[in-house]
Length: 159
Ligand SMILES: C[S@@+](CC[C@H](N)C(=O)[O-])C[C@H]1O[C@@H](n2cnc3c(N)ncnc32)[C@H](O)[C@@H]1O
Image 1: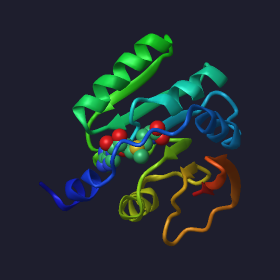
Image 2: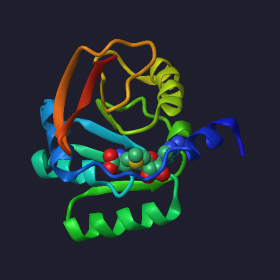
Image 3: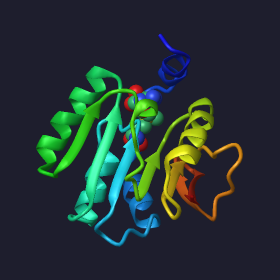
């Protein structure tokens, strides 16, 4: 397995609570016609929430654990939303057409993704990360969300 693959394996499937997923979509302040990715999409719930709030966005997720991907395909089918959930390593995909990217990954993966974003993203692309920050870029906005009696942060970046 490649170094990228090894690092990516260390991020387990920990789904974002539905309420927080909706909060993330609202915080991204989408116009409604963007191309939106979730890199490490899990069961696709953030993209499903995105499509419910903004039916005309193009929603694409990458998930590399086949069982989680399959669960996501079922969840998307059940939701009736037009979300493309693809099986593969998000770190190897071309995301140059992204207008907005959602992330809930762990610090090592964030560092790898930051390099990828620097290489590929067009100016103005929004990147919204739940909990974990990029090591070098500064967020231009942040928001606290309540979680089990504490708070967690949403970090909004603009490339
Ligand atoms: C913390 S979970 C978040 C899932 C979803 N984004 C959410 O917020 O509910 C991270 C997911 O990313 C997947 N993942 C981690 N690294 C990945 C990679 N390089 N490519 C694709 N999926 C990855 C894991 O299998 C896991 O399902």
